[in-house]
Image (tube, rainbow, N blue to C red; front, side, top):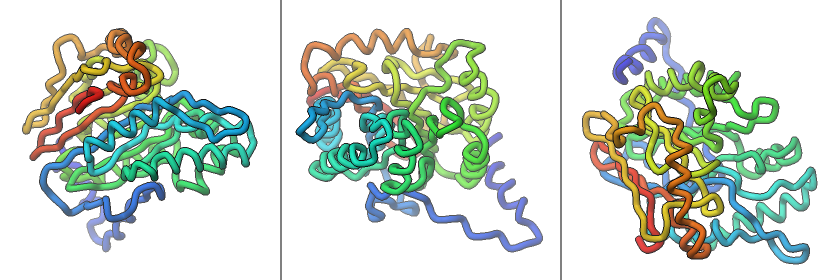
Length: 326
């Protein structure tokens, strides 16, 4: 269904009564409001960082993640409007609220020092148990949310919800459908999730549920790209019904190597320009090839490939993996 029809249906649903005002975007506290410009226009860029980082957690020192630190520094040098972090941000605390607080304090301090405006969504380690989920809620707010920036719509999903890990279902699925309708005539729609729920083999429960319940909503709304953080990075996007799927990976899972960049774009007409052979493939095999280059050059080189730069220019969006020297 074309995007203008979504907008028409949203209006028609309220015929005969005054439509309630759209709720304000719900954002984690990690992004100051001044960095969100819904009514703005013009070209811009944002960066996406993979998920599932390895942390050093010595007994008497703050936790640290050299790979995450290097990736964040690389992202900052690109001077994006904002960064999106795809979960797996701290190691689980095994129910120890104090240990979790120390780890999140170290994480926030790391990002604050870089002065990088960012949004974060949770991964499995971030919502490891009820205590971890409660800590996330108290510190950062909702674990799925959306926002607008320069006439583009961004949606962050939670693939690790307690009791529903590996699925986008129930109230979250209802919210997703409603939010995509609200996207209306947004020039681009981008979706973020920690776990690539589409990547499993045919017949896997989470894969079947994604393509049955979630993918049709994304395709009907003409979502541009869905980014996931966990697992080996994709060398190429997977294309299905006009929606690009792309696993970013992490510095610890591997990348394209220090000097490598890979790009995929969408033209002004909205047609995806993924390379031949990407469509219909789960992407894991291609991602393994991209993972090989990350091991030799240390944290900075490993971070190359764990950062994606997305440029929105007019009605086109171009994605590239970033080398260590942008």
